[in-house]
Length: 253
Image 1: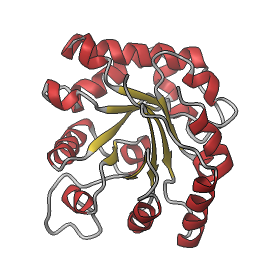
Image 2 (image 1 turned 180 degrees about the vertical axis):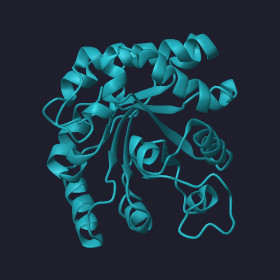
Image 3 (image 1 turned 90 degrees about the horizontal axis):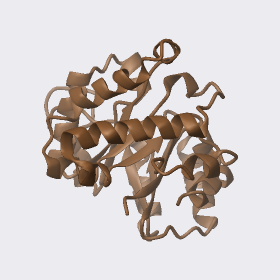
């Protein structure tokens, strides 16, 4: 069975002390993820080591970076490379989040190079894709997200694609309080899996975890995660509340 994942994306939030407190509260919830479940905490770069140490003894929990540079090293002041992340023992990195695409102008070609750099350093990308409201209103979302996958991922080998994590983000539902219905999420996730299957075959597509990333909360996680192609969530605001995020973890299949 493919991994069922609850991924917290703290974004650029919390002081160091608040981050420590949040992880302590989450651990205190006493959740032991099942073998097919994974909890990820994508924390800001300054907190990666702290979070890794806090979660070192917690089975089923791991820390993810929120981004990495496309080059291994060099004169890129302020950037963080995949080899740096790997040297800390990290296994996951979020790439292509809608905020990175919008605010930092990251395009599909750049993200393809970031994916390659992550994989070559043993990091599993949590690759984000999704459409803005204008595309959804034009009923062009299927073609839009399929193009994102083709441009950034479909140069990968079958082995590289196996076990990939994809996060579908309906951009119109991020931070707005709007949420795609469970049926809309399932429809898009099924479509994404079919696009992957067309390129790589149904067996590999069946091993790709596809997360929903649009205003997931403790109150809607059970319904969303009950859908057959929704393998968990990439969670923003609700992940900053230990009790609410714990509800989301418990909602995993």
